[in-house]
Image 1 (tube, rainbow, N blue to C red):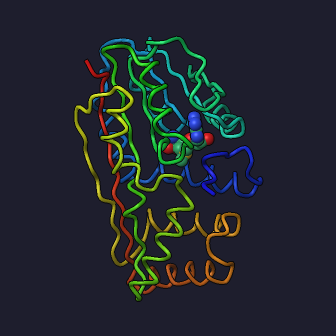
Image 2: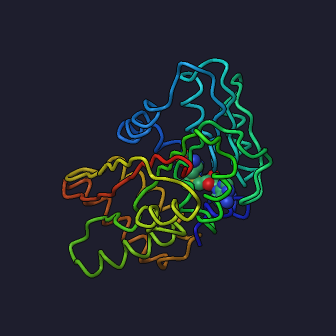
Length: 267
Ligand SMILES: C[S@@+](CC[C@H](N)C(=O)[O-])C[C@H]1O[C@@H](n2cnc3c(N)ncnc32)[C@H](O)[C@@H]1O
């Protein structure tokens, strides 16, 4: 059901909702800070070959372009021609290479990249282990893998009734991510793919009273619910209405955690 697993098979309306959501959330100050946080750890004093694996509209590699060493080579790779089309349009005048790829088979030689970033990719791929193994093949021996993802399994939108809230959270997050629990599996997956976990960082993004980041996610869900079929149209409308009312009356609650994992190839 996860629309990010096969964007090119989505309707124009769903695809546009996905593009809008990716672009909007990247501009949110808290999300931006989480990105800045791990960008700060990437060396800037020498040229690097960097891959944004699962780049979507390219928000991440576009943010990196002006801050990295000017002789760096930057690549955005994605399975979706349609998202790459918007990435190209949004990055005119930059020196980013955009490549359409097959899942788990990227058109680059082994040990090409100094840095590989997977920014909210792994929770959406059909095979996270194979995707990480491909990253291990592509990374230089001293290279760095950065995996940033949402712990969708813990994302929650407050409703007055706990059992209903659990049910809606489960249905929505299972529909929006193929692997809502990816962050909880990362230590195992990294090890199995030949990586060594060097460090990790977690961020909680919570909103109490009024919504902002999570409210725009609710609006995104409102556009996606009919296509995802996770809630009936009436249930979906009622859920969105409750969230908007909670925001209006200052009783909104939503929270979710995000993780950044830094890894290198195991010695
Ligand atoms: C949630 S979006 C994230 C896009 C971008 N990294 C961002 O955070 O704005 C997930 C992206 O992964 C891409 N994707 C899904 N499966 C993939 C795979 N096996 N290999 C490469 N990209 C994939 C989708 O096309 C989509 O662009």
